[in-house]
Length: 146
Image (cartoon, rainbow, N blue to C red; front, side, top):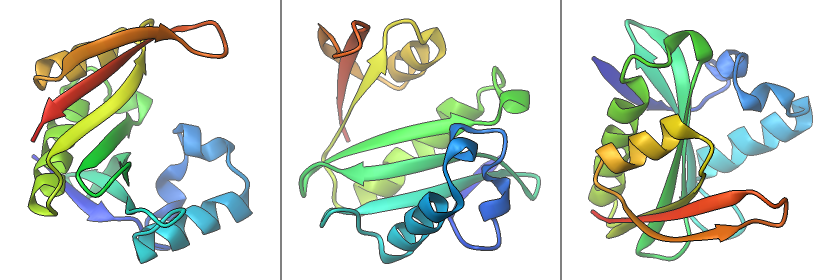
């Protein structure tokens, strides 16, 4: 069973083995401060640690686009992938977002990221449209009513 907990200085060391690892120390500190304030560029933002058996196995960030629309971006550590943790963690985060008053979840996924495509479809997201991003990669924009 998984649970989510807000990011803190105590669990920040667990950002290793994720894309957050590439951030500078100053960038990580800024992200943690914004998460604790639950605000980034004037909108709701929160970084949540994904726990299993008392250990951080990944991260989720919730970012509001408007007062009703939110995106949820999970990142599970590589050694815990393909075990359903991403799907379970995102389902928990979407329920949390709904309790916070959000009505729609939305987000873009690289079409080559088969795991993320499968996760979104399993959770009932609808592919609203596809487009080519500025890097020339095919993206799928997903939406879901909460």
